[in-house]
Image (cartoon, rainbow, N blue to C red; front, side, top):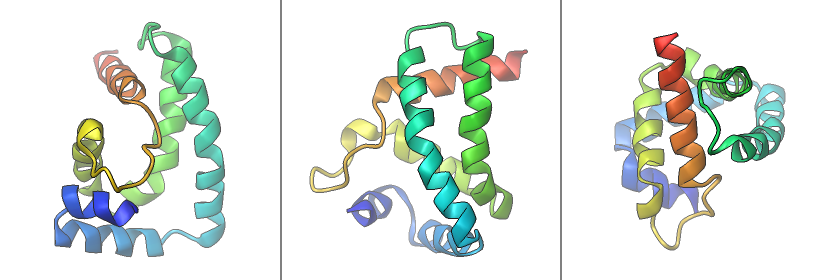
Length: 119
């Protein structure tokens, strides 16, 4: 199901970069990352509507970014394709995967990230 989303928002070159980057993350590290996401997403959902510059939001942003960092360390250019994909959550293919988080969560994370850059 994810391939439908990736094919919509990633170029063939970006798809190849993702595959190469993911293959360079150890299986153990990848499993740790996958297991950590549900907790981080649930805690982010609870913070939606609060101040994204608050210390709790900024701490959660650091966790969010740390979970993504192994891929970006391998290929920093992939951050742009992720942003494009999640900026368009509402337009994902109907036959695609269940969205991993709400548009409100994504907007909160972007606001927290913007607040971090201002600080």
